[in-house]
Length: 232
Image (tube, rainbow, N blue to C red; front, side, top):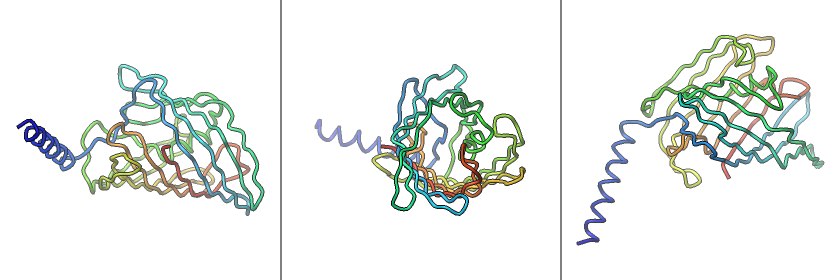
């Protein structure tokens, strides 16, 4: 009888989970103070006629969650490498950078190692503010931003398509695809990509992006790149 009861409970939970998936899913981050996420980064870049591969490890730590839902994430980089042809060299990670987000996920401020307009522009190329509601598969979202001190003083427009749920690296995720374009500035940047968002915590499990004229901080000029970030 106990086994039958347990099977029944599992069935009820499975049906409930299916109902939630059919109703939709939340895309907001659900940060917990002290939470840490480690990721790997690979960027295949082209700048000034040269090609290179950059790899590194990234660690994000939620340092503060405020009463209104705003939260801060400290990011550090380690084990950076740059490979040009057969030559590989170390790339310094620099100091920590802290990004403050609204509860919806919009960037409010960046402090630390690099707070330049280029850093703000790069950060906004894959950061979207989601409402506190359920989103459904097939839903298309449009975001438009006017120039401000929090986005590098450029205007931009982005389209985000909510996809299906997938299991990736042991995480239940929602796949969203995006198309982002700056609409002002001397050399407008743009990016397209895919983000697998964890249903459990709302943070990315994997990101794949293609960047054009990207303002990578410290680079000698705009960069074209293919970027992949994965949770470890």
